Length: 307
Image (cartoon, rainbow, N blue to C red; front, side, top):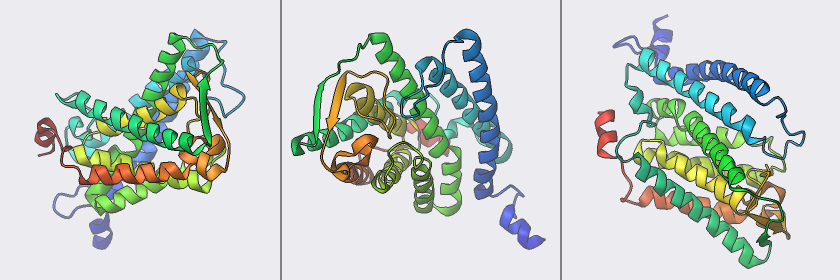
């Protein structure tokens, strides 16, 4: 019995060990998310009964459905993290890294710039190689559509970062160390994208590398704003701006249209640039730069919170 207690609880204060707190977060967040998604569906059915999920799973769901869905799932994920921090960790909610400290917007803008630069470099390289050609999209595209898609992708990026680089990742860092926490959560990040349309072994490996990049972005700042900025710009520039599928999912409207040809391993095919070996190189380069740069570090507010 004492052996089990030592493995599950800290001997000194009787608290649940960090790794089990990370595990406990999963069903708690999952249950709250299910409730949130049910509420979102009911809200949409009442407010916009004509809105339906696209029959083609390769097309992003309508923003009028996606925005309340993601907004409520973010609330669920944050509520679960708040409860775990309050009850089991006895720490401030600010330690999660999603509070609006003085420098949050600088970290977000830096992340946005890095994410946009990485995708621009990948698309530029594939365009030079001749496997990608961009042209003006023939679709009717309004500012309202562009803005609503941006909101959807921003909320989606924030939700995924809260889930994958938030409470469970942070507790794994505490329990098994940063290296194993990065490996485990990046592998899971790649695995959940396997069912996406047109996924390949290379696209899955690239998604794992993207998970490593985003985890390093969190570790450099100990806040979620930098990875949220990277994640959002990555998807927004790739999808609504340049017209590529985002992880195999087509955007309902775009500024440009991308035409791809040649081998899938180079162009990414129907999965988008994330299925290209060029993105492999970009993700590795971005991760190495983040790890080595001394220009990015936790803000004074963040250091104070983590003490």
